Length: 190
Image (cartoon, helix red, strand yellow):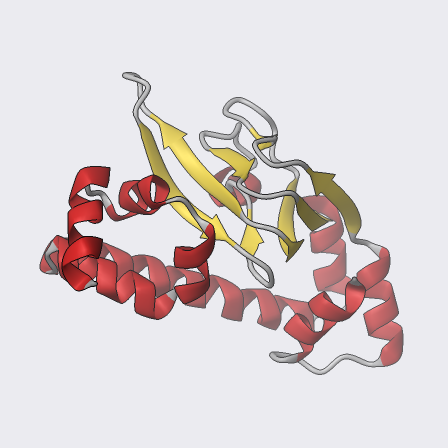
């Protein structure tokens, strides 16, 4: 299980065998079942999670009870309520398993210690954060500039594995379109 995360990390930074051992030694394994809530609003968020196996979603419920999916996460992705994690605030998001999932948790305090002991991890997480920021900006611009069909095609091109594993109504929610509109689009594209 640790081979996946080590491959993920060493694709961006070089680690000695000792540094690899130290890193995997601070990770905690967490198994969650389909539909299980990992994080709920109001909770303290002490960990960010690397997905070894499975699929999860992060979403916000507004005061009217409407769900807004912010993120999906499959194998080799990270998920959490990152604002709560980095800002040490109570969670605003739900993080829920779409499939049975195996995660590796990285605790915030341990992460700070890791930065001091192995500074190259700051570079790794800076790269991950920068990539996430760019992806978020791209998503916002796409929602402002493109129609439903263009956004759906872009989503399928960027994330083909999500499109096959996540129910259509959740993809529609993520894209900000009605499920019926997505069904029509998919029929039209076939």
